[in-house]
Image (cartoon, rainbow, N blue to C red; front, top):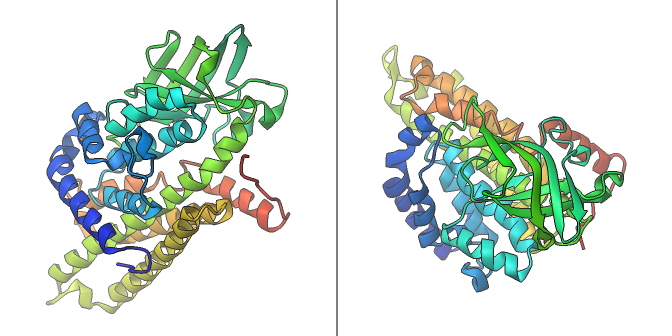
Amino acid sequence: MNSMYFTEEHQMFRESLKDFLQKEVVPHIEKWEKTGTVERFIWKKFGDMGFFGLAYPEEYGGLNLDLFYTVIFLEELQKINSGGFAANMWAHAYLAMTHVNKEGSHEIKEKYLTPSIAGDKIGCLCITEPFGGSDVAGMRTTAIKKGDTYVINGSKTFITNGVYSDYLVVAAKTDPDAGHNGMSIFIMDRDTPGISATKLDKLGWRASDTAEIAFDNVTIPASNLMGEEGKGFPYIMQHFALERLIMGINAHARAEFALDYAKQYMSERTAFGKTINKFQALRHRFADLYADMEICREFNYSVAFRLNRGEYVVKQATMSKLKSTKMADEVIYDCLQFLGGYGYMEEYPMARLLRDSRLGPIGGGTSEILREILAKMILDDKNYKPAT
């Protein structure tokens, strides 16, 4: 493993996380994949181990560690072959909790961030809408101020942890006529009247609960506004750098897992009197795939290094997600082929890996949208600025 980014402490953390996942998570994966529900007890175990607090302040129970602990957390979650379980964990720890940490008041952090780190509360982030998809500025959900409350109306879709979470971080238009300048971020409890969630049936990520959520005159205290009114869009954009990098890291990690599995399989499977890793066509294809994975991994580590230093890496993180998710799909598609008929069988890992990986170029901003964002930055010299 790359010693330029990882210390001995990082490696010790990786080993303890691997052991934890094998012992506490892997025995339940098949059940969770079938039921589409990750049981509550595992969130608490993650919290007890400190896994949700890696990147968060000690004041709220976090460990305040560098970003490469998060990289390890993400990589190892991809290597137990449940993209859905992994998504539940990182969507809580990095999508919902990032907003609570960055925009929440001290009171909000005590109420939501501390129990989130402890594994006692689960969060979800609600941005994507049925009509808008990756077009965040096209949001229709509104939050209209009435006295010392806001009244929320609208809907969100494709929300990870959307059914079983305890609280929701919601983006809504506080000034519907102001375009992307009229957007704000709110936090609300699941049991607030007027919130309903419908579970979605997906191709992959079967262990993860993904929901469409409706807000029907949901009334919340004005103090549930996070950060400044009207600053929601730059807040969201600022955190997209982390979200895109997370999805890039997830992609290189699942590709690495697929290659490791295929390598082992090819060393044992024989055809025409020799193991299939001796056939030049397969050897050379494997070498190409491995090189593609390694290039993405090295790039992703360098972006993580810069993000960890506080640089604004939205362009590089966008490239990370765009290229790594495409690479992972190609790698896993071919690794399934290396297994022949067994690749198509559910008892082997590639079938689920293929389904789970296919979300990579879709979720968190489609590849098409990402290409347009990059084109604006590269060709039109557009500069996305961090929220101040």
